[in-house]
Length: 246
Image (cartoon, rainbow, N blue to C red; front, side, top):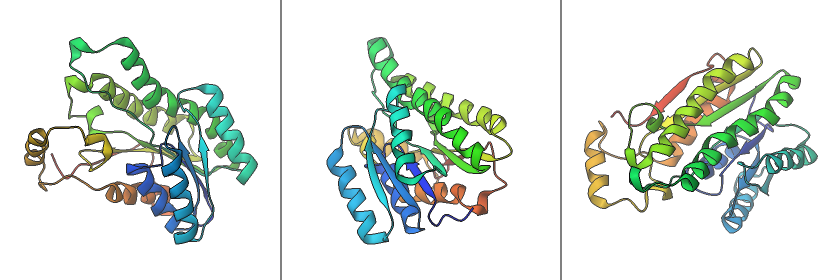
């Protein structure tokens, strides 16, 4: 599957890893659907940038991926614009760090709904399109927090990312042999998600990493683009860590 003119939906694409994925795939000729929840200004800026810099099609669609009716509307709008969806990147996620005993059900539900139920719903409504086309790629953005870098202050986030890993394994079976389903599990990446963490903690975490630095969003994007390409056609059901060694 050549990436040129392939239709890609990236959730939570207005910033961070999602934005880097959008730009990298646009650079390879993909048509980009930028999904966002609240940040219309950044999403619009990215759309205009992609059109101008990469000379390819890009649209923005606001939708809350944790709500089934909004996911159905999102998919319908994409099909109205492009008639198909070739690649899905489940990137939208939130983190609400709190000590375990101060955590409440509202925050827990919100995290699980966005980070896990959202990808489930998107796969539910987009996978049939890919199966009909007998081809497609789904790349889920997991985290090392779902594998081996646990944090009691992020217990719901960790659980959601472990769930994404389980979803990836199960859908790789369910959608075979036509759709490849893989996950990328970043470690510490320089994004806005980490902007409120203390400098002392960040320095401690860097010391645990073999490369002694955090990753950049573009480094994650390059891995996502590889999994979306023909070069990764024989990779399925895999969880690939990108964490600098830890």
